[in-house]
View 1 (cartoon, rainbow, N blue to C red):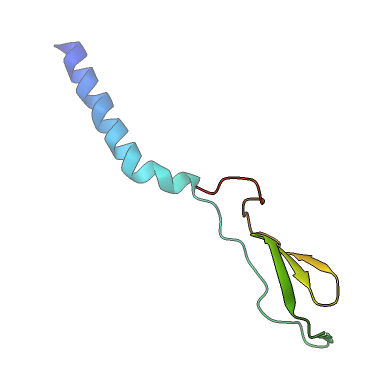
View 2: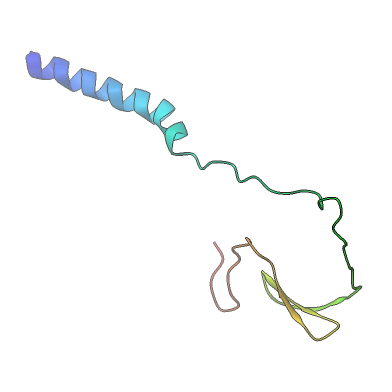
Length: 81
């Protein structure tokens, strides 16, 4: 009888942890800067995307390659699922 009660308490604890325990492991939100600080000059260079070589790499009309930071896209020969 004692083992059965312990079993039910453990099952209840697992159910409660499955609902509320996940929030403990959530990633903290990353603070991002959305505007340019005052006094900073911004130079823009108009370019055109000529080719998308994979999900996060672009080739530009000025011959440069631009890689998107923070984008985790599969490479050309990798499966995407």
